Each structure stands twice: as structure tokens, then as C-alpha cells.
Length: 281
Length: 308
Image 1: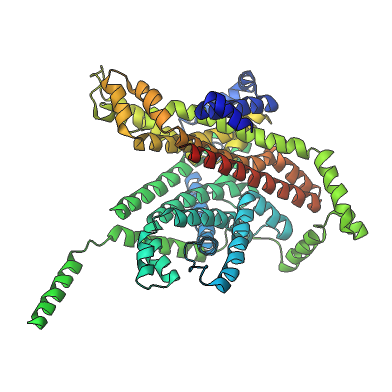
Image 2: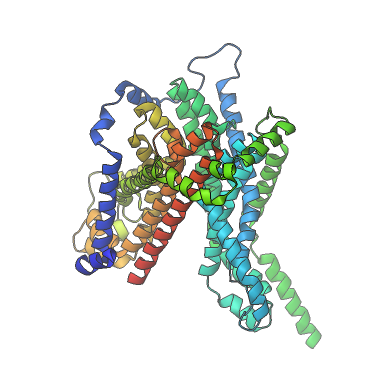
């Protein structure tokens, strides 16, 4: 089609770049993004926001008598964020692993020989792939909104709202990793008589495990961010505090919370990298 | 005779067992994760709800009762669904919102991709050093500058990556007002960090020889990046670009909730008006777009893979 015509006359690299640039220019035009408008807004507010980055608050910018000290509020918001992320992940990981197992063909016995089993396994695989795609295609915040409108806000509802799309994403990546890794060990085990599930568990899973763990840590990192965002629907995580502080234009407090979030992400990444280094040897 | 060899063999095995490295860090990590997860589950509710169980079930009942499209509910006939859906799509702002969502994602992905390309050579450990790819490249006035640049760019990538799009969008809208720029910048800043990190990993893993040739023939770091590394790893970069574009589409559907017309805005509106049938319709429309985006990105990646 258009892509192949472009490719023939321009070469595929130039064609790809051209198509991306055209799409980008169209989008800028559709959204009416004029760079000049960035400088026509409230410049003192922008300046205040940017300058606050260099002096994050250590106490309330406008202290109220008898309020909890600022740093204590920061710590409790951080702990809530972390807890929310962990709760969501501890539901999402088993669900995702199960879905990934069901939607992967890597552990299947030879279905040409076991016709009946094939008839049973194939629909199972298709159904779980469809569930995976559907769960993933609706954003966690929208799941949250749906649950909140249906049942009202509660911890369980928020956790499930995050766990649904997260297990879909985890399942997708896990099953891709199962397919990607070398099957040699698995096939060798099959050849000496191991059952197909046993060969998968002993031959393929250990090979894929470092990748699975690295990706799961990345997802934990995303879960921390999502937990912060869920502050905007009412769970008192970092996002909730950022909203309150920003509504009163206390940008120095906002930056404190942003830096805390940054620190959490850095710690998770360091941990993940340290684990990876030890698993690769 | 045979019992003795058996014995020495067992002893050898025991010896090897003792010498086997114990991954203490892995074990203790596992323990810490279990403990922390246990704490997360037992430390009480994160949100104390004011709703009683009966209110909750009444809520649920009302929500489910309103889920079927209003005309279908009135007539009890699902043939009324089609005109209702068409009307929502064509006469409301739905199509415009779909277009805006896609445009937000594309503009943001392109912007972040472009910016990331500019900063990637600074973050790649093999380029931003005193000796790029192990070749001395002139002493320079201030040799430590490269490691400083490298650290700074890496820090910028991690920091921008750690800021969630939604929070950035909220802050930028509070500063810039309800302007599409706020959402595009929010998406672009976060993805700048991710694309930068992924891109610098691609540069670090790129084949060394072409880049070394450029430097050995008198080219600089930038020359090696532009003339050897980028063409070599073009496909991998594009694959990452489309992967991020796909996530941008997903995020763009919700960023509208902050007040700029896109699908999230319509969802929020329908929810506020308690027309749950419309709300679910828009949610499913959003899911459809995300799936279409996934599919497109999959096709492009497959196309590029065949190319190689």
C-alpha cells in the first residue's frame, strides 16, 4: 500500500521516518500546538514552579496550628504509596502468571499426536489471550473509575482496578518471554522422557526467570507511579498530597513529593539491577 | 574397590556442594519482599470508607440497572442499540475525541523521540567517556567533563521517567491552563526518560566495529553516533518508539479527564451526568482504540523485522 510505495522510492528507513514525521506534523496541526503559546501563559506561575525545584519544602509553606509535621505527612504518604503498589502487585503477579501459562503454547504436549487434548487446549489459549488483551486495553484509572462508580471507593476496589490491567500486561510479556527463549533444554528433557509440563517447568522456566524478574520489577516501578496517581481518586497516596499542595500553589511542597517518588523509583531500579547482576552469572 | 570409588565420588559431590556459591543477596531479597508484602496486607485499610454495605449494594444495583443503553431499556429491543451508538459516535464529540486522543499520543511520542535522540549519545556509557569505544580521541581541556555529562544526562532520564504522566498533566494544566500542550508535554516528559534509557542501552549494545572505524578515521563521538550507530540500530530504535507510542495511546485516553477534550473527558462527563450506558460505551471505544494501536504497532514491528 502507501507504506510499500514509500519504501520502494525512498528506502525503508527514510520511508519510516517520513511517515512518522508526517503523522507528527498532522497531530501538531490537529491539536493546534503553537510553541509561542507556551510563553504567553502565566509566566510568574511557571517561574515559581520551576524555581521551587531547587528548594523543595521541608515544612509546610503555610503552617497550620496543630497540624501533623510536614515530614511525617510525607513519610506516611510514601508508605501508603508503597503499600498500595505492593498490594496491587501481589494480586497481579499470580493472576498474570496463570494467564501467561494458559495463553502460552510452550508447555503443550504434541497436539498432533493428542488430538483430543488439542481440542481442549486451543480454546483455553484463545480465551485467555482475549481476556489478557481486554484487561490490558482499559487503563487502570478507568477500571478504578468504573469500580468506584459501581461500588464506591474502597481499598479493595482500587487494588482490583490496578491488578486487572497489570495482570494482563504481565501475562502478555511473560508469555512473550516464554516464546522467545531457547527451547534446547526443554527439548532435551522431552527427548529423555519428561512430561511436557515438567519439561516446561524445568527446561524453559529457569532460563526465562531472570527476564521475568527484571520485568516484574519494572512493573513494580510502574505500580508505584500508578499508586501515586490513584491519589487523585481519593486514596491518600503521594498523588493526593500533590493535588492538595498544588491547589494552594505550594509548589515547594509539590517538589518534595516529586523527589520522594523519584527516590522510590531509583531504589527499585537499583535493587532490580543488583538482582540481575547476580542472576546473569 | 567399587565401594571406595563410590565413597570418593560422594565426598567430591559434598565438596562441590560446599563450594557452590550461595546467592545470599537473592535469598535475602526474597525474604524482604515476603516480609514487606506481609506488612502491606496486614497493616489495615488504605482508605476508610464511609459507605455501609447496603449502600454499596444499592449503588451497584443502580449502576448495573443503568448499564444497558437507555433506548434499549425503554423498548426492551436490542435493535435500538445501533442508532443510539451511531448517534453517540457521529453527533456527539466522540469521533473528535478519538482523533484528539490519537493526535496527543502521536505528537507526544514524536516529540519525546526527537528529544531523546538528541540526548542519547550523552547517556551512552561507551560514547560519553574520555575514550569513546576505547579509542583515544584527543585530550581535551577538561577530561572529566565526559563523565559529568554522562551522569547528568542519566540523572535527567531517571528523573523524568519517575514522574507519572497523569500527575505531570495535572501540574502542567494548573500552570498552563487547559491547553493540549500540557498533556502533550506531560506524555513527552515521561516518555523522554524511558526512550532515552532504552535508546542508550541500544547504543551501548550496538556493534562496535563501524563506530570504532569512524573514530579511528578522525571522526568524533557525534560522527560515530550519527554515521555508524544510528543507521546500524535504526530498527531497534523504531521498535521502541512504536512500543512507547502504543503506551502513549493508552495514557492519552485518560489524560482527557484533566479537562482537555479526549476520550477521558467524555468518560468523566458521562459519569458526572450518571449516564452509565454512555460511560461504558466510551470506555469500550477507548479499549478498541488501544487494541487498534497495539495491532498497528505489532504490524510495523513485524514489517521492520522482515526488513532486516
